[in-house]
Length: 313
Image (spheres, rainbow, N blue to C red):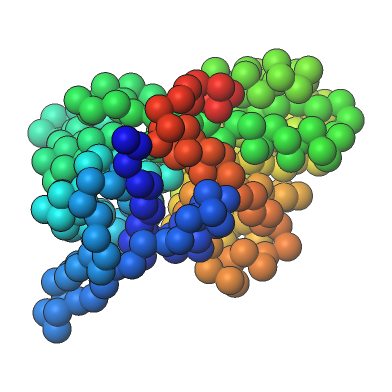
């Protein structure tokens, strides 16, 4: 007998969770999420989940540590309530940028978070555009790693840009940019960047011809927007016309919004893996695309034990 599907959400991105439930035509599960006076999080599942197939939607975005702990508590509560299977739906996987020892005496935080999720009771992971795809190997449970590319590609194709060039802000993102360029029949440009320190980068050279072309920069994360603004400047100096950018995860921390406002950038397109404040979402330079249908379809297929692979591209 097939188990019932139930969907719960933490406070990380309730709007996305509701949109996913609307797609699935299931009600959002009832949780009590509060805090003690000293700041400790408290969670109680307010409905029966015994023997059910449970999905918990929670990006570990800002406030990162609060959202991560809340996810762990929800999963533990569901496990102790005898849920048949618990799938963590983490649209944005925090700490993914710390995926290896690149300096002496530093943690591999992405692995630690994977261990914490599994210890809490996560039996399956569904996530979008990991900063390093190899993080899938940090888990001993199945991981479905979706790409936001179909949503972003649809937007770019709909805009019908002329003389389109797809740009990568660094050599590490070259494979992603090449995939976009191949699907769109566009040319490719890679920006040679030398990183000075965390969140500080020096733009060097543009590899590829962008003169007179409309450029669209693609990457997984826009954080402080320093690299993005430098990339735009480099493309403009090399003769590019209009420049837009597409990102999966809109972290937008620190001076990001001020930098975007002052930049020579036409548009920044992001998905709703991370919720934007109304003020940020209302910015004339920012366009938000929803991945609710993509995640909802993946969840439906996981619940039905059918293939998810056709959603990866």
